[in-house]
Length: 556
Image (cartoon, rainbow, N blue to C red):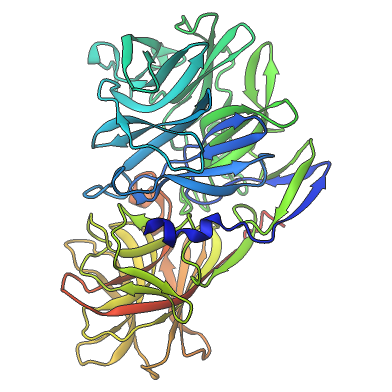
């Protein structure tokens, strides 16, 4: 059933190809909540994956042939029988996947935090289907990745401090274990490759996201350090043997933004968690995560995927930003093929989804997918059953999310819904997590009048806070809902039956939806959502379309 719903993911449309000698690349290359990138090159093809936490489907897989044009081709977790995240907060779930390839097989390693821990999956085709997970209970830690060296395979990961006795908060290690990737069987004992970080005496924290690569006679181990916030960085070590000893680069970190002025214009911050890959021109490039705050450390778009070239200095890889700051745009020095007709993923763009052929693979459910509450037809569009579950809980509500991908953007939907009682609501969410969201919806008030309402997630308890309510003058007409985001300011508007837009609330606190306020590791979504608020219901809401438009000033 889920594969039918995601049919649009497989439709390439009438793509047009244009080749040019140099091409401007927009950063981030994957805008919005696409964190913890991992990349692999197989022949002329590139495949990239990201963390998805407690959203379903899990671990999106992207394909490119030039590092510029990307298309999502699958999700690794696309069957509830593989894994679900029921009972998890949305910011938990799947942390930091890594993708590798060896002898005709693609591998994914990842961590299901708070549950079964680390696992291994495989496929002969990155477009899927992917296998069920092989659980790795002996790999104690997070962020596992594989390294193939001849006929041997190793799993490298963030592990406990030596003897499980940390010297300070955030003291971790990078460990390695030989593994049979086909069975998940571990061979021998694990080894500590890095203790603490570059310099243990300086108490480095959260060494994580490790990868090993071999270039010439050197084995390079590189990892994030400093925690995935403003002190984030990427550091590198090298050794003549796969099991070390690994010596740190004397000019670490090789990537960070933490030493730049906090008041600089249009900052990109928190850079780290990188992986290197050889580009089509034979040079080395890095994908990594960073964020785009609109003020201080406030950002709503989550951690995103960026691209930059890598320069080799005295046989050490250093991320080359062309200056101290991560650029919003730069030129790739080789021919690329611009593919028109692909779903946009970077720069300024807009799109409209009518749901005639289902939904695409970028759409997100909460924790799993249970068939029966969602259908499509050409006459109506998306038909959503209103169920008791709410987005405040840890279950599977009637919820379909799309990422907020710009600081300045708007999302619009058209809903046809006739609520039977005040507990039945359907509309559009601006959603960060269970405790940080706004909900613009159609409902009824206590007297039975048709109303449009704006709610804020509860500050205490489980009851949403009603912020604004307007009586609808044409209660049988379709209702258009629009959310506008402008950094820290959000506005919510409505239109009855195609009439002029009216303001529901024009000065809503957007910082409430930021990672700085909410905590965790995710970004904001706009979501189609309906609920009967804990009571049984057979009612349905019809969403005719979803429209998104983003326009940030840095992409002119």
